[in-house]
Length: 357
Image (tube, rainbow, N blue to C red; front, top):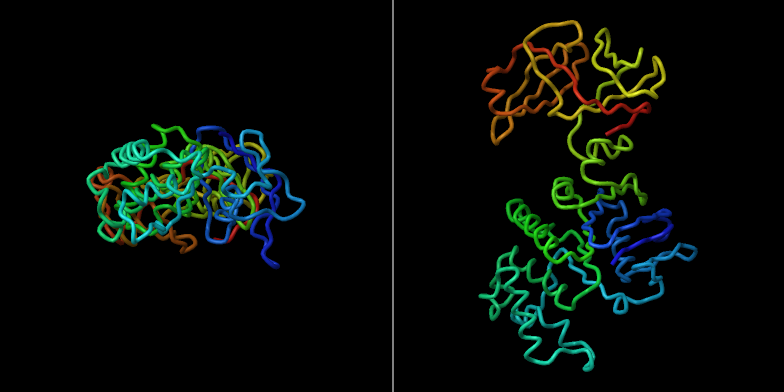
């Protein structure tokens, strides 16, 4: 079931939650709506679901090319998973999962045996068949969120919508559940849209990402496209840590002070003032001096985890630079706090206009 929204706007008083947003989601894809708080992610999801409606003059909402703009949430046949589970505390897990089936009109309601078979099959799918008679208060947060998800799937929705489904969970459980969600989606192949402000979550789970900011879609594409080729400074900054270097371009090469650092893509005005965005893992640290490197001093080293994080200060500007190297490379370099080193920049993303983080 494909989804398309065309020119959707939504005002709340004087606040523009969405500004002329258009998005196409092919059938069977898992798409992340990614952005900071207030960017319009949840509003767009709720409008797709039919829990909210776009402003007059907005374009249509199409499910498989059928206009559902005037359909209420019940007619759209979507499954919706909220951040805070929304399970019925007085019902056991089996009854929670069966709820959507039990409240169907009699004509479309499965008989007792079919209902039991469907619910137990879903519980087995998420490895919770042993807790069918327990109550939500007796389950962990991760288990409750899995129940909320299969309760949404029990009614066989055409589309699955998830609003920050793992936002209330701790980091370790979040990571486990997003891997589980990806496997479940691959098995069921239902068109799914999930809202998140967690960049790592979106990059790891989604087939495609739509990055929202101030009610607009800044960029959409595969995780690799938006991460490796950000459309603007906002996307580059939002999708992971970056270092900023104020530079100029001459002969299609990037210059910082007297250093000629690297070749840049055509299209940047000769001698123009530009800002290069460089991710920490694209900072090369060396003890070998040469004219095109930036001399820096090691300020702090953190080796907890698989990556060594090195904080440096540039000697020319006193600006801080964050670098990340493998533990193996760190052991080879044997860096020490306070020593002088040289840094080179790789894969800079260059933007002509200034942007303040």
